[in-house]
Amino acid sequence: DNDGDGITDADDACPGAAGDPSDDPQKNGCPADPDRDGIRYGDDACPLEAGPRSAIASENGCPPKPKPRPGTTPQPGGPPTVAIEGDEHFEYMLHGAELVHIVTPDKEKRLNALAAELRSDSVKRAILQGHTDDSGDEGYNQMLSERRAEKLKQWLVIFGRVPADKLVVRGFGATRPVGDNRVRTGREQNRRVEVVIER
Image (cartoon, rainbow, N blue to C red):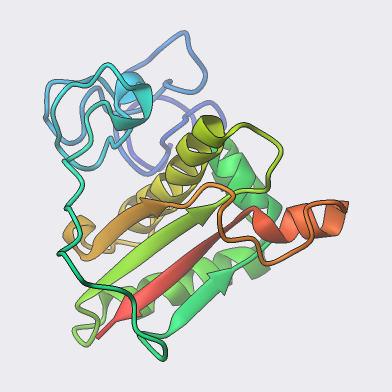
């Protein structure tokens, strides 16, 4: 019981943060409202960032998205990107506790190295960009890509001790494939989170 909440790590959906017991395995042991925005953990699409209630499930409890400034477009040769591609544990990150049990020592090393870099004073912020394959419809893929990136953020904050205000979550759905969606290996490549680091 790493977080001392009386729930064994094997049954704790949030073993790195003390929480409350729940009959729902995906909420068991999770803080009731970690960001204190009045929206319970299981209903909050952004449980580590305070935000208003929304009828749109993927936006409920999330801070408003900043609007792009008129006339701004990403410049080629911009900030470096760290791609975390095709690792099945990013899919499992959507299922709470399974992340902790599925991350292998090698993958955990990569995540810990990323967390250490993001904690560095030289990093101003990191944009966690979630992506999907084209299996679902546009709305579903958008929601899934945002949740995938949000789950990485949760891992980095809870287990990697990265300050939450350094991390920005963006979802791109299936709009930026790196692999061929017609084949399994291509779809796996497209289910990913990319981390853009700004110094």
